[in-house]
Image 1 (cartoon, one colour):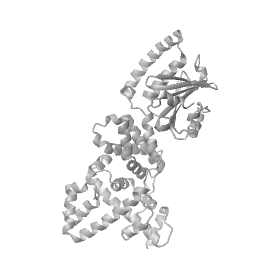
Image 2 (cartoon, helix red, strand yellow):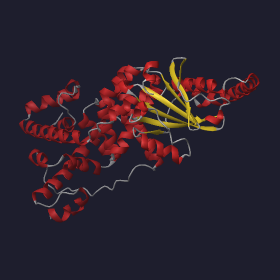
Image 3 (cartoon, one colour):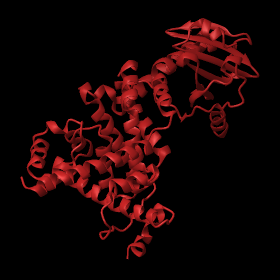
Image 4 (cartoon, chains in turn purple, cyan):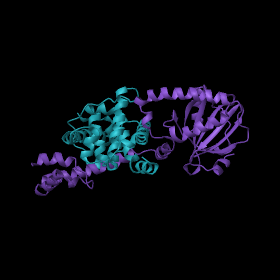
Length: 247
Length: 185
């Protein structure tokens, strides 16, 4: 190895990074002990790299809010399962369509409680199938503006405990041809609560104004109606007591 | 990836990933979005990761590929004009670097062409071995080394020009870098 070859290798050397364990770096470093000129050049090179690196890192620093945003993401995004992959999706969709037809016939012939169905489906969806949000934002006002633009429910009457809480984002869903606004809120202790809002008219009998608390699967839920809209809160993290405190 | 692993992955690597994303996009908002998208893929596709010890490398590779995907669509990223290279400037010294602002050095980095900027950023972030950098960029280690060498030369030439402007009490502005020809002649 001559000095020029050693320079090329040493230019890439990063002190304390483990580079010195690589044979080529070890050989080049040994070369500096035999060549004073190379040693001087290397010292200057390291001094420059140290200074540039020390100034560059803070200049590329992440904003303070990013970590919280990334951690919150884990609360709402679920893994894509095999049946959600593109290939089996079509076959699965056909099967689901058939099942839905049968279920619809069953539903209307047995006159099942529409809200209970809705609550069960939405609780399962938010627990297991929520794989993305249409808008990610900590700002509830921005979420409302976005929902209003999409002509979805945006003029919401929030329970006192949700007022002032940051959102994580929102998604538009559909329930029997009616738009459902899904807004994810961050509660205390980083608990997440999903608020779903739909027209009360979609139910034959919508819930009363007083919230009805119910555990559905692994989710705690609260459902109530106000101003022609039916609200449902579903949360995996919160206890029933936590939900009660929101009202 | 369970929630505890995910939190650990965020805490350990999000700052370096953001910095890498920032150096790619030259835009703070897009860097945040790119980082978020990378972690979103960890949540949805992290099951594909067989060897947990390769998590960091997987995150950097995913972020870089996501960026390349965005770039292919050419809808989000600004086109960076690359200034002419100055060859006649004296080499920048550590003392000159000391007086330059952090943001000035970042702006000089953003001026480099992407294939120089990317290995140089990974070099300064000091998060990955050269083998990992080669994997992230899908390049042989030798190519990474030679691009890094060239990138360092280019960055220092730009910094030398900026330091010269500062010495001559000319307001430092990266957009006025084209005027260096006149200043140095």
